[in-house]
Image (cartoon, rainbow, N blue to C red; front, side, top):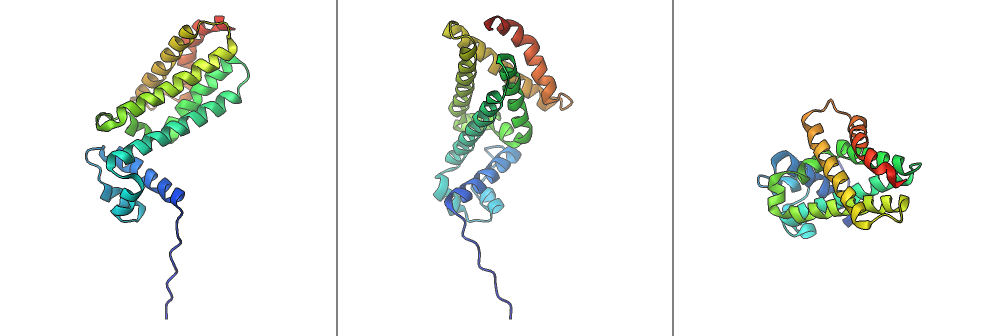
Length: 198
């Protein structure tokens, strides 16, 4: 007589991680409009009500995906900058960490920048990610130039974040451009202007 193995009970945090992983994949493959909660539930191996219990709605699930990407991106860029030697290396390593994150988390990046996701309510959340990154870069620059005009540092940070986004989109169209190359292209342009902060 066969005995069935009892199913392992999954904790709330692990289940939410599983659902978010599945949602990012489904949203990036199908687009927000064509993705369904059924598809996400099926990928995780749970029922649709379980997904609704954790995230409330498809938009709630989308916003949770964006929030996780925001946290992850700050963690990797902050860790890279903390391990750097000097201001130029902080910018270089933080920028490379950004591009490396996008390489390893391509579905999340695709999701964040899809027009459907932005129109579905992720636009403000994406702006929060930009604001988080610009604030982080401005704070890094301020440690190197404490007497610099804060508005100037904020402006430089906006330029850097915008340039990184455009480089990332370009890399998506031309995979021959490595994260190292994209980082050097940014440094070629940005560090010339920022070097006087030393």
